[in-house]
Length: 254
Ligand code: G
Ligand code: G
Ligand code: MN
Ligand code: NA
Image (tube, rainbow, N blue to C red; front, top):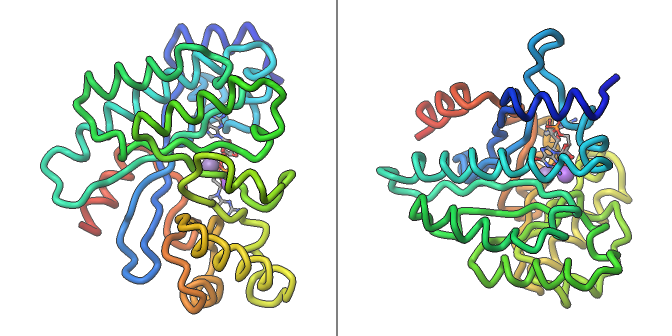
């Protein structure tokens, strides 16, 4: 098991890396963006996934430093991807609720956007529904400030959390990511079919973008295409990839 000290050492030794999972335009199959997913490349154990260490990092506060590494790497990558590419390639970063307690989070993004001369629209922030229940009003303020800066805000794992629908109207959200639990049994479960249809019609009314997560097979894809869902992500297209593999995929599908 992992202890806080090991995480601190891993930060010092720069053992964190970013993997990228493509998002795909469902009508064309084109790569429309990427989700950045952190990995701990442990010298002895190998690749450790975020579920193993993010909860600990959230508890001891190291999550801020880890996500700072991710933010820096992703924005630098965005600069390289989007210079000399005709179609914009955005990337999404998962941010922990705790990061919204950082007063300087907005200034950090502002500085990096400036440093890399990036269109803020290329940067997407993924948050979870639990952020809406936060008692600290600063959290929502930060969200507005990031949106005002031009970043896009996505609601991750949509439909699994507290799902008070009122927050969608109240808050600066651009995109809903339909949780993969609804996509998993989409081909044969009528409840999931109803939920996914509802999310898609609601999103259309509210002018929100939608991404279907966890698409694993052709039937699920077909179903989502029939419902006119525009964007998707999942093992059917690709698992999260190391940077070189992701760039190889980009080249092949460009
Ligand atoms: O990559 P994988 O599917 O194993 O990711 C598992 C979970 O870890 C996902 O819910 C994902 O959102 C989360 N995650 C990945 N990278 C980060 C990160 O940089 N910060 C936070 N807070 N969560 C992340
Ligand atoms: O919670 P979040 O959406 O950030 O989680 C992303 C995680 O989901 C990543 O760890 C990724 O490995 C995983 N994932 C992505 N696509 C699929 C899929 O098609 N099936 C399953 N089971 N997991 C997926
Ligand atoms: Mn996510
Ligand atoms: Na998700």
